[in-house]
Amino acid sequence: MAFDRHDSKTTYLVLCGLFAALMAVCSYIMIPLPFSPVPVNLGTLGVFLTAGLLGSKYGVLSVAVYMLLGAAGLPVFAGFQAGFGVLAGPTGGFIWGYLAAVFLIGMILDSSRISFSPAKRAGSTVLCISAMAAGNLICYLLGTCWFMMLMGVDLWAALTACAIPFIPGDIIKILIASWLVQRLRPLLR
Picture 1: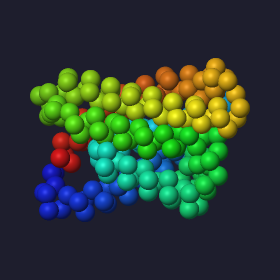
Picture 2: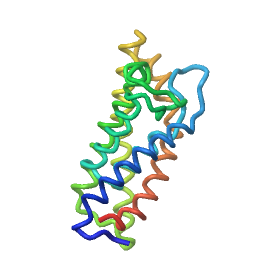
Picture 3: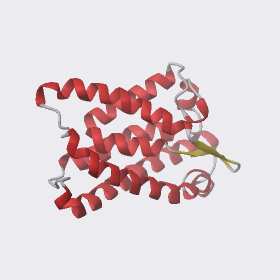
Picture 4: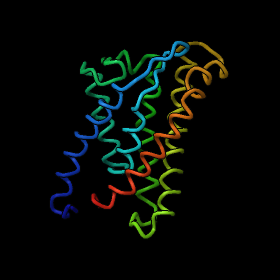
């Protein structure tokens, strides 16, 4: 089912709300770690899907809606947390990193000349995985720097608490999101 151009703006605005809700649901699915205030959650999977399917413009809008809902007091963040304090707290840098990640991933995928048709899947697989890895890296960078500033720890302590333990899970999330984006993106374009 493809959308015609007349309905696309309204359709994408509705999808922004749906993907904001998807990010909230993904954030609820979490595993707290005893050595880190940053929990393992599926929030980045929601970010990868949002960027890959909505692109940079509507992806950023969707993440902004998610963040505004959380800042306004709706419990959309990991652990059913809410409020501006979460955005300003130790994990806040990662949530702010969602904006940068979705923008970067969306820009890479939007500007690519690679078709997402089944016949050209190999090229789109490499592109999706690379774009999502770059977005994840920017999220790590912002989140780790934020954590270092707020908690007053050195780089190694921040990396061991905020980045290194999450790499295997994020690789799996990137592979899942890439597979889904390749199959669903042609329906939205």
